[in-house]
Image 1: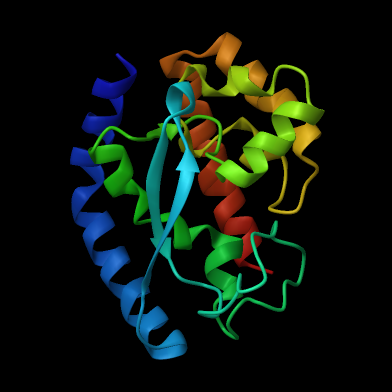
Image 2 (image 1 turned 180 degrees about the vertical axis):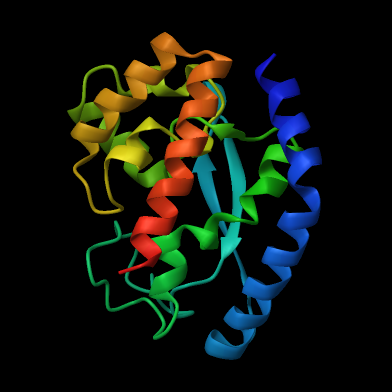
Length: 186
């Protein structure tokens, strides 16, 4: 049911997605140069690692010293591209991950393997968030920011895992639009 729901939403929104993604890709190309799409390993359903795609917002050498969590006012973000992070438009290419079945539109955000190992040791129940497909947006994303504490986000992720329903997905999707508009208006 969840997979069918995702595919129907993608089909309905496809014209809007294509136009918006093309405009954002052109903007990223102008601001950041080559390498508009960024690929990164993430942990998905049942702990399987997959390649997440998104628009590049950080400099090409952003992680030359190793994996780092994003921070508020992160200096690695290319000038002029923080608006994409605030509005979550950098996540648009992940709709491809939804189409291919690696992600869902709504679910716990997929995390990088380096951080998952650490969080599983520190936070009891962290691996439960991998019981369902990861999402582009989720309950934690409508309640928190990029730099919010992982323990706080985990509480929302587990609440979602336990209470999933199509109505909850629709509610989170509507809340996501509000969050995107509010954060991009800053």
